[in-house]
Every structure is written in C-alpha cells, then in structure tokens.
Length: 249
Image 1 (cartoon, rainbow, N blue to C red):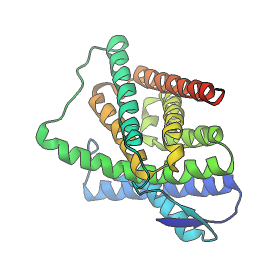
Image 2 (image 1 turned 180 degrees about the horizontal axis):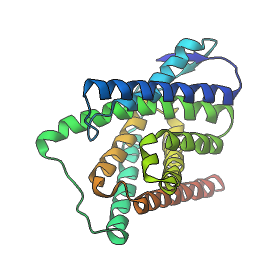
Image 3 (image 1 turned 30 degrees about the horizontal axis):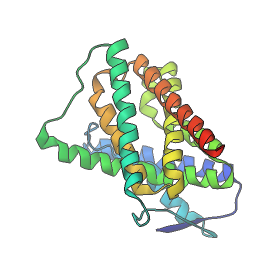
C-alpha cells in the first residue's frame, strides 16, 4: 500500500493530518449516533478517523512516495511475541496497581459468545487508529526529525484526540497524555525496525484495548489515569535505558 506527501514543512503536514483526523472522527461519530449504531464497548466507529485522515493525505499530496508497511513478510516471530507480550505485562501491572491503590475491583471478562464480536470490533478500531497514528504520522515525523520528537508529538496528539476523556477533567487528560507518550515510546522501540508495520501496531493496540476493557469499572477515575500514565512512562524510560546500554556496548 503506497501513498505520497509533498516536501512540505513537517509540522504543516502534521497539522493538516490532525485537522483531517478530527474532521473524520467527528463526522463518523455523528453518523454512528444518528444511525443508532452505538456499542462503545465493542465497535467504536470514530476510531477509523485517524486512518481515514492518513488515506486523505494520500489523495491530497502526491509528490514524494511514502509507503505503509502492512505485509508480514520479513516480520519475525519475535516481533509478534513482543507486541503481544510487552503490553500484556504492562496492562497486568496496571490492573494490579489499580486494585491495590484504588479499589479491589474484579476485572470484567465478557461472555465467551461475545468475545469474537468484541475482538472483531477492537481489531477494526485498532487498524483504523494505527494506520494514522503509527503507520503514517509517527513514522513520518521520526524520519524527518527524530524518534524522540515523534514520540512526544504524536503521543500528545494521540492523547488529545481522545475527546471523551475531557468530561473527566483536566487532570485526567493530563495524566492520559503521559500514557499516550509512554505507549508511543514503547511502540517506537518495538515497531521502529519494522517501519511501523501496521499489523504489528494493530496487535499492540488490541492488547491495550483488551486490558482497558477489563477495567471499565474504574476507567473514569482520575487515579486510574494517573497510574496508567506513570506506568507507561516508566516502561518507556526503561526501554530508553536498555537501548542506551545496548548501544554503548
């Protein structure tokens, strides 16, 4: 799959992409609401907004070729295991900390009959988001600037894009931005060498969605947002430390 962008200023491109993301997200949210197709636990159609924004960039700018990696060719079993294992461990740690410091809630597990539908909805949403955030935007900024800048900028934009969080207050959103940056940093480490392969990014995202799905009981609690944000930032910091040690050997 290939699309192109011009040699425009990087931040102008990112700005246009973000505006398009908001446009598509709001449009699809309106359509979902008007049609009555509202199943937020399983299929959240506005998640397609970032991907549609990336595809819109394909139509609007056609000068310098830019490719999205969506093939499993060249992807090792190690890559697949890491994008499933790492977020699973992090999410398990967040659940444990939330049960310790917030409330001893029981993670919500859906009925077996509903799992295929829920996973299908999560996969669709994950592909929609990651086509935009990682396969397009984060990779674009990283190749033009640096990995650190890409993680910070796209992590913040990704966090701010979750408009539903605004109802929980400024602190909640601020802590959620820590999650956005930290998770983007971990994904940069795991996916950077694969050109931000869309399939791997979507798998990582699905694990996140599954983990947070089990914590629906406390998702609106600002303490949950704080714990989640701190844990992801700590994991990203650990990743940076390990990278530095490996590079200095």
